[in-house]
Length: 554
Image (cartoon, rainbow, N blue to C red):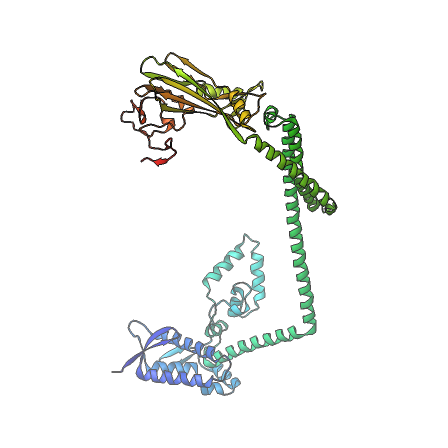
C-alpha cells in the first residue's frame, strides 16, 4: 500500500503516489535549475508543467485517479531530460524526428503521445482579425495569403465568407500556450521544442524592439516626428479655431436676433405711450398716469436707458456675425453720456410718479337699510355669468382693470365686502372709496370721484363687483371697501356669486369666503353663524381678527 499526495499542477489537482511525487519533484527542480539562466525561464517552466498536466489528464479516469511512478517515468521519457537539452540541438532534433511517434515506459507499457500530429488552432501571432486563416494555413502548411484572398472574394457572394469566418472564429480555439503553438505546427511537445519556441519568440520581440529603437533614434525619424508633431499641433489649433469661429457666429446670430426682437418691443411700447399702438397699453390709461410732458420725458429716458444697450448689443452681434470693424470704441463714450442722461430722466420721472402715490385719501358714505323681516338677501350685479359676457365687450389690459369700448370709463375689480355685527338695532351699508395722490386733499378728491353702485329693493341688496372711474380723472390705485353692518339676531342669505367680493368675513365656523355663498347666516356677537349647513361641514381656514392677530383654526 502506497501513500498518495494531492498536488496542483498548472491549476489541475492530481492524486499521485509518494514515490512518483518525489520523482516528479526532482525532475521539475532539475528543469528549473537548468533554465534558471535562460531568458523567459518562468514561461518555459509554466508551459512544461502545463504539458505534463495535460498528459496526466489523459490517464486519469473514474476507475483510476492516481498517478503512479511508471506514468511519471513515461512523462519524463516523452518530455526529455535537461541533459538532453544541453546537447547539440541539431543532433537532438534529428534524433527526435527519427524517433517513433510514441514513447513508452519499458516496465508498464504506459504510452504518452508526443508525436508531431497537428491540431487545429487559431494562430494569434500572425493574425489579421482572429487568426483563422493563419491557423488553417499552419495546419495544411501553405501561405495564408491565398486563404485570406479566398475569404475576401467570397464576401461578395451573399456574405458567405464572412459568416463562415465568424463560425470558424467561434469553434476553433486559439493557440495560447507554447505547447498549443507547437501542436499547431505539428512539432513534438517536449522541453527542447518548448525552450526553442519561447527563445525564438523572445528573440523576435527583442529584435523588433531593437529595430524600433534604431528607427526611433535615427535623425530621419526624429525629423519626421518633429514635422508630424508640428502638423498635428497646427491641425488641432486650426480645428479649435474653426470650432470657436462657428460658435462665435452662432453666438453673434442669437445676439443679433435677440437685440432686434427687443428693439421691436421697445418701439411698440414707445408708440403705445404716444397712442400710435393701443394694444400694449391704451393711450387713455397712459394719460391717466402721466401728463403729456411727463410722457415725453419718460419715453425719451426709456429709449436712452433701454435702447442704447440694445443698439450696442445689435452692433456687436453684427460685428461677430459678419466679421466687420464698426469702430465701436469711438462712439462708446458718446453713447455712455446719452445713457447716463437717460438714467437721470427715467429716475426723475420714477420719483415723480412715486410722489403721485405718496398720500392716501378716503371718502366714506353710510346708508341706513330698512329690512322687512329677519332675513336680508345679498346679491351682486353683474353676477359671475353676466360679468363674463361683459368681459368680451371690455378690454382688460391689466389684472382686474377694464376699459370700455368708448374709452370713457375704467371698470376696476377692487371691491371687497365684509359683514360685521351692528352696534345698533338697524342695518347699515358703509361704502369706503380709497385713492392715492400727491397730497391728502388730491387723494380725497379722487376717492370722492370714484363711482360705486348698489340697489336696495325690498329685502334684496344688490352690490356691484366693480367700481367706476372716468378716464378724464387720474388713476391712482382706486379701490372700494364695502361693509355691511347687520344687527345681532338678523340673518343674511348670500347668493353664490357674492363670493366675487367677499373678503375674509368672520364667522363662527371659520368657513372660507368662496364656500359661504348659497347659505343663510345669522349674525351673532361672535360673527356670522350658518343656519343651514347640516352635516356638510365646511373646511377650516386661517383668518384674521379685527385686531390683526393671525390664528390657525383646526
